[in-house]
Image (cartoon, rainbow, N blue to C red; front, side):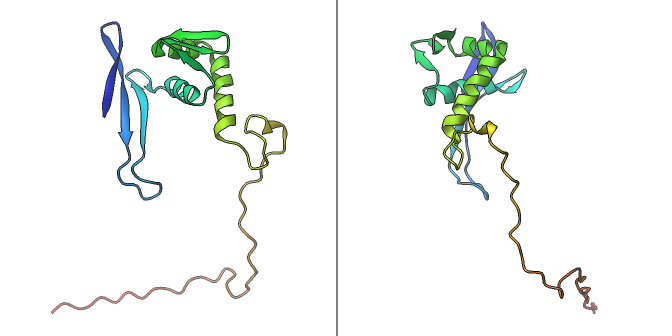
Length: 150
């Protein structure tokens, strides 16, 4: 559902949308998410970055101003999104801090600091005992018998 319309002056440039998963076979149902859909660029990653950073206290919002440490990102959400588009290095730094908070690795290091360690091996199949009877034995053909209609 559309929550609000994002405008630049009098011209609508996108919508702030709230989506709810009602039925899902592979994940938990009844989850909801809010994001910006911009007419000229699809889903706004900068808007999601700002929302997650505020939720994780990586950036702070004081009134209408959004700031990261001593850097004032912008007055209002749209100005902050534009600032992050213009400064991708700062956006990447904020993204790494969010990932470090939200995705800690299994060995206790955060995801952002574990780049110096060896990369994790791909998931391997567990070793199965070798069965010579099943090794490359084709499956027997399936017989299909149709009933004759009278």
